[in-house]
Every structure is written in structure tokens, then in C-alpha cells.
Amino acid sequence: MSKNICVLLGDGVGVEIVKSAVSVLEKIDSVYNLNLKFNYAPIGGRCYEETGVPLSEKTLKCALESDAVLLGAVGDWKYDKLAPELRPEKALLGIRKKLNLFANLRPVKVFDELLFSSPLKSEIAKNTDIMIVRELTGDVYFGEPRGIEIKKTLDNREIKVGFNNMIYDEDEIRRIAHVAFKSAQKRKKRVCCVDKANVLDVSRLFREVAGEVSKEYKDVELSYMYVDNCAMQLVLNPRQFDVILTGNIFGDILSDEASTICGSLGMLPSASLSDGNTPFMYEPIHGSAPDLAGKNVVNPIATILSAAMMLNYSFDNILASQNITRAVKEVLKEGYRTKDIYQKGDELCTTTKITELIVDKIR
Image (cartoon, rainbow, N blue to C red; front, side, top):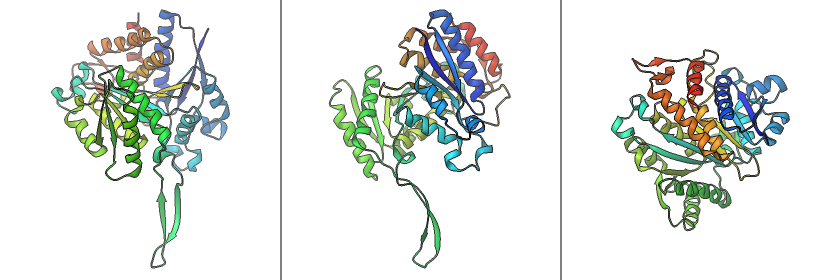
């Protein structure tokens, strides 16, 4: 029986990096006989150009009828003047909502071969291995009411006021907390709940519900940390963290910060999970980088590692997943690098070249 993968190339460098990941998956398919089938659909700016909307019903149908979704990245500066509902980024929020992708897993693992590229001292960055579990469908990105309105001041002037509502209900918090604790059980059995409970009511609820859920996981240690302190601690001592449980906006910011420990956004994959009734989606954490599109210089490893996560979480094939990770590690160990992780003495590679090297290592 075939395993259907909905492939969303997206915008900018999304086209190149997804093609790299598909090449790796095709090689994996030849080794493990997984019978993978790739179905392509547009999303973001590309979809807007073709259909007039950034997320079409046809694309949603492709995603919903698949076993897993592989996404490049969306966005391009040329769409910045479009109405908010037509901008490419609206497609990303929309497909997450339609697929009920509430849990975003962002592993932050430093390869020994790339310690030199980390802005942190090697002795601080070495052995960093963090799983950031970010809630994905709530918080200020989706909260209502929201908008920009004209209001009158006390001295009768009219001014613009922008507002977004940070909101979570206990069910949303409970389900993401379970994902974090289950992840911790397969790791070092530690969860750090990151919030702003000293200021925000919604964070106080987040902390309260996380504590309730923790009682169901006696083997996992739960701690709490304010988000500003966590941002500092990620730089001072990243190895203190195992699993970080947090909301949408804090997780968005912290995971990008944590990615720098690895030396490049081009190294970090992610998986977005649903309740199991809809397919999971896999994508690199970086953006579409339209200034690099078509130049054959972008690092495809984050997308390739996202494909490895797909094999693990969607297709329950840990051996195939580990095969990809091993191939990436071997290529890096031999000194092959894309521009973002290059240092003098390395072999500078194009997107195409490093993809070919990784494919050749899969056996």
C-alpha cells in the first residue's frame, strides 16, 4: 500500500530545499521499499499566482487526503502590499488550522562537526539536545478580537490602535502538555514549562494546567521558567534543558534563538502534529529567503532532517529516519558544507551537491 506525501514547494528557496528532501526520500524508498508517492500542490505566493488565494481548496484536499505533508517555506517581499488575507503567510496559519496541527516539535541538536559555527563557546554548545514543544493553533496569532481601529484620545484626536488577544483554554493547554511529557519520557525525562506567569493571566493558567498534567507522568520532572529568563539561559547553559513546553509566540521566538546554537537556521527541522485524525506536516524552521532563491546556495539539511522526522512520526520507521541522520552526519564529518556553515578549509557545496552527497551515503 502506498504512502502518500503531499509536497508543498512554497515560495523562494522552498522549491530547492523540498526537491532535495524528495531526492533523499526517493533513495530511502529504494532501500526500504516504502512505496512512497509524491503529490504536488501550490501554497503561499505560488498558490496566489495560480488561484488568487494563498491556500486553495485543491491544496487543502491534497493535504487532507495524504499520509504526511512536506512543506518548504512561504513568503516573498513582492507580496507585502497584498491585503492581509491574501498574503502567503496566511496560508501557513490556515493549513495548520485546517489540519489541526496543534503541536510543533522543534529539535535543537548540535552536531560536533559544526561546533565551530555556533556563536557560543564550544564547551557551552557541545552536547546541546533540546526538544521545544510549541503550541501551534492558539495564542496571539489566532486570538480574537484582533485588528487595527481608529479611536479618539481624551483631547479628541483620532489615532490608530492595534490589538491582538492572547488566549488559551485549558483543553488546548492540556493536549500540548501531554505531547511534551510523552516526548520527555523518550528522552531525559525533564520538562520545563516556559511562560510569563508573573505578568500574564493566560500564563498562570498555562502553568496551572501543566502542573495538573504532570501528575499523570510520575517519571518526568517538571520545572517552570519565565520566558525572559529562558531566553538568557539558552545562551548561558543550553544543556540544562531537555523538553521545553511553551505557547505559540514564546515558542516561535525561543526556537529561533535556540537555532543559532546550532550555527544556522538551515540545520533545524520541525514536525507539526495533530490528534492523529489528520496528517502531520514537516518543514524547516527557516523562511523562504527570496534573496537566495534560484542561486543553488541554500542549505537543504533542515528540510532533509524534517523528512527524517516524517519517517519516524508519520510512518513509524525509526531505522529509515536514523539512516538519513547518519548520512547527514557523515557528510558533515567529511567537511562538506553549504555557505551558511562554511569555514576555511571546508569543501564549499551548492544545494544540489550536498544533496547528492547525502543521497549517496544512504544505504
